[in-house]
Length: 168
Image (cartoon, rainbow, N blue to C red; front, side):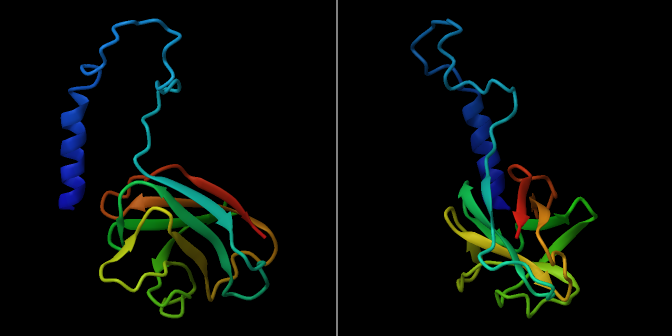
């Protein structure tokens, strides 16, 4: 929480200096290579989603997708995130963290997420992936469309973009 507050303070402080350090006062519209043309704020966190290695089956314990963290600062798991899964456009499910890595310590039926990290606290660092899978619930027995949202564990605000993938 302190780190997040400090980062917000630092960002607010540096926003006041935006544009002050550029010695080029040229306002030519052709020199906007770093501008965000969509007007959308630049995401602090970035994630990438991929289909899990094994195919989905009629079992209720498949790994569905891997979500790789590719931009931001270390995130403490599970306290700083909430992982939400939507399958084929149906209702959203909040996945439970599995410290065992396979969902065996999660009360099903539910989805789980895990990361291979034996440290305390568990940190999700850039370049690492979490696994999202099934526990006593067959979300996908044939290819299905998944939507994953990584949310702030406290405010529940979206961290990065909504991720879409097909589990096959």
